[in-house]
Length: 85
Image (cartoon, rainbow, N blue to C red; front, side, top):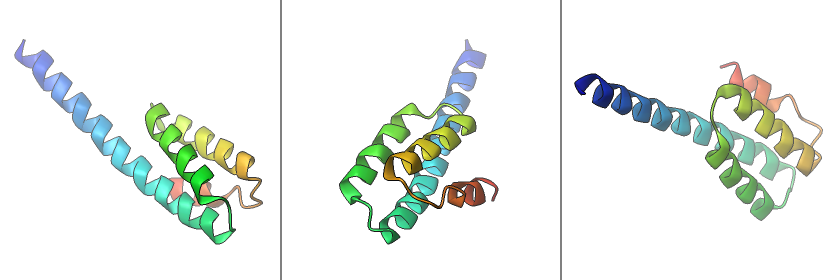
């Protein structure tokens, strides 16, 4: 029973930590997108959608690609730079 509680707690911490990283990456993307005069509300809604769909780093990358595709930004390599840090 104690092991299950510990595992559950670690899992929650990992998820929280992952959400923090995702939020940081999403904010970086938001800043880049805002520079290109994209609609901030559209960016915000997409960011919220991403925050609820994150399960692993691959999903993060795919969702950012989807975000850039929707906003038709030429700089699709921006997130690759942030994800590799």
